[in-house]
Image 1 (cartoon, rainbow, N blue to C red):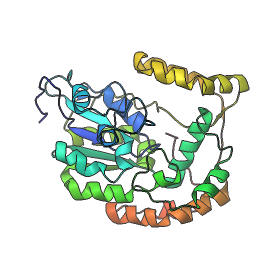
Image 2: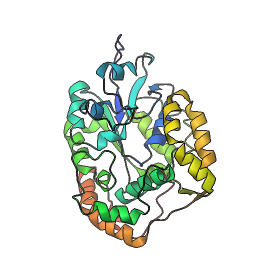
Image 3: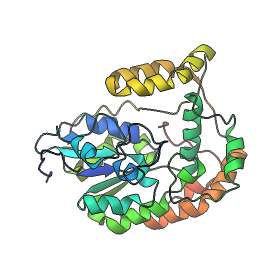
Image 4: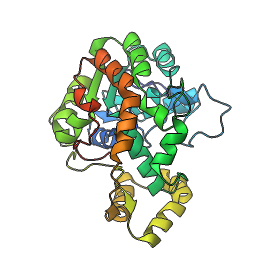
Amino acid sequence: MSAAPDTEGRWPDFLVIGAGRAGTTSLHRYLSQHPDVFLPATKAPSYWYATARQARTDLPSSFVRSRQAYRSLFRDARPGQRCGDVSPVYLAAMDVPPRVIDDAPSVRVVALLRHPVDRVYARWVARRRDGLEPTRTFEELVARELREPVFREDAHATYLASGIVAPVLARWFELVPPDRRLVLWYEDFARDTAACMREVCRFLGVRDDVDLGTARSHNASGGRIRHPVVRSLWAASFPVRQAVRPLIPAAWRDAAFRTVTRDVVRMPLAADTRARLTEAYTPEIHALEALTGRDLSTWLATTDPRRGRPA
């Protein structure tokens, strides 16, 4: 049953906690098409991360730090709608789960998981494409970051550390009972998106026969924009795009992104780099197996199996 709204707003009924670069943008867009689901217009308000970091000046402007501002995001939900928050940072910091449960003890939680090597590489590719990452090669970045411990209590806005989610997921599992948590896998999501979304809808207690537009993926990493002028203009326009983002309908933003990225040069990950990172993430993969009961033996392969469409 959806919580009743009040004049201040309300807490969400469910969270999609991540992981980043695992399809959460697509999941957000699909759920936003459901008439019985209410999501804030902007993905990733990230309140339960940002509220504990009031002094930080480097957080995205979309992060909401105020309780009143966050609860007001759901004020316009209709009676009976399930309200949700899709914020991948909730799977990146150990202090987030208990803070969530203190405020919203009955919340439902959805996690979408992907091979850590693929997620980390997809993040680098996307940030290079958008002009946000100065490191020219992924191998240079890996060599630099492997000099430090990979696990961090707070892995927001990191590369290799963001590949470690099992400790945070274990904390969620401790605090949220099995009937209120759902784990999805990127491989399944890419192979049969519609079936996965029906599972999500049933988990949330809403109709599972609504057309959510699952034939289209969103925010794919893609690769390097081929045309140098388009590439330069896209990278240089990032501050402007971020500033006007709340004012532009999602459909228009999607159309612009598809136009700019329709001709990209694919950037396959070097085999030796994949092997090196797979070895580094082996404890993480085993930890996820133990937590979820999923056989992840294919994740331990050092070759690059096809893992579906990018996200």
